[in-house]
Length: 595
Image: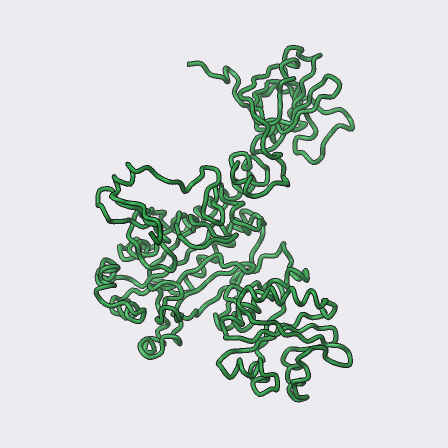
C-alpha cells in the first residue's frame, strides 16, 4: 500500500523545539497558521495542537523545495523535514515557546490543500457563534478551544485518579432505559422490536447507582452522558456530562468529605491552586435570606436584608399590602453608589422585571436627607429602624423588591449578582465554594395543585421531619446538599431513601397512587425490600466545572460539539427529518400538532 507520508514520520510536535535542539534534523507536521514571503525567503508558521514552530523555505538551502512552497496557503496540511537553526539576533519571538529557533526545510510534502477558512484560526476570532458552530471542526483548531479540550481531558483524568485511589469502581449504566419522572422531559427512543413502546435516554443514572449500592458494590462512580429535553441557556445542553458518585453506609459528612477532597485534588492538579477545606456551609434558609438564591456567589458582599417587619404597618401601601398578603420586602444596600443615574436605575428596574418583579423601589442616602419618591411614607421611627437594619450611610443607594417570597428572592438575588459584576466587586481569579444544605423536600406546583420533589423523589427527608410528611409536607426538610462555586451549582446530591415503606410514603405525598408508582418503580421498591444499605451520593456537572476551570462564560466552549439554544447541531444539521421507511419500521406516523 502507498503511504503519503512515505518514510517521513513526525519526530517532534510544534512546541517542543528550543535552543538545545539547534543542529538537529527533524520532521514536523501540522497546519499552516500563516505564510509570509520576505524577499524570496518564505516563512511559514506551522501549527499543531501543541503550539507553533516557524519553518523557513530558503532558495539558497533547497531551490526546488522553495519553488514548491509558493503554492502553500493558510490551513494547508504539511510535512516538513529540515534542520533546526538559531534565529538571528533581534529576530527571536519571546511570545512563542519555540521563538528562539526556526527550521530550514529541505524536504516538503503537501499532505492536503485547504480552501480559505470562514474565519481566522486565532485566539480571539471576531466571528458569530453560529458560524463557529457550523464550522466547528475548524473552530476547534483555535488555540483557546484546543486548550479547553486538553484541560477537559486532564480534569477527567484527575477525577478518575482520585476516585480510583479511594476504591471507587467505574461501572457503566444503560442509555436505553424507561421513562421516570425526574424533573425534566425525557428524550424518547422508539423500539423497533417492541412496536408502540419507547425507551428513554437517562436524565441521570440515579436509580441504577442506587441499585449498585443494594447490590453490594459499595463505591461507584462514572463520568457519564445524561440527557434532558429542557429549555436551554448558556450553561445547559440537551446532552451533558456529569461525574456520578454513590457510596454505601454513609451520611452527609462522608459524601461531602469525598467531594471536597476531589475538588482539592482537581484544582491542585489543573490550576495548581490549594483549596482550604472544609468548605463553608449554609442551610438553604440561610442562603435565601442572605443572598436570595440557593446558589449564592460568595465572592462579594451586598447581602440582603428582610425589612418586612419594619414596613408592614407603614404608610407605603405597596410594601404594607405585600406583607399583608404573605409576601416579603427585601433591601439591598449598594454601598457608595449614590451616583447611579436615573437612567441606570430604570435599567435595573427593567432587569428585575425579567424575574417577574413588578417594580424596584430605591432610596439615595444623602448627608442631610433621603432622596426617593417613597421616603415621605415612612415615619421617623421606621426610617431609623431601616437605617439600622440596612446599615444606611451617606453615599449609599438602597434598592427594594416587594412581592411573594419566591419572586422577591429571585429578583433581588439576581440583582445582587448583576450589581456585583457591574460595580466590579468580583475578583474573577477567585474560587469560592460553599455547601448549601437542608433544602425543602417538596415544592408546591400551583398549576398542578400538588407537591413535587424539589430534587428527586428518592431523596431522604430529615428523620425529625418524618411525622410532618402527611400533615405539612411544605415544612419537611431533605437530606440534600448542593456544592456551589462562584454562583454556580456544580454538584448536588443527597442521602437516599433505603426503606421501602418510607419510599412509598414519599410517592404518596407526591400524589402518586399505588398502581402508578408500582408500575413505574416496582423494581426499585422490590430492591429496597431486599436488604438495602443506607447510601448516598453526589453528581457534579462536569461541563460546568470545566467551564469554570477554563474561565469561560459558556459550557459550549468546553464541549467539542455542542448544540445551540434551540438544541440544534449546526455542523450536522441535526435534528433532521427521517424517511417514511424508517418510520414504518418503527410503527410511527408523523402528525402535525393541531391537525
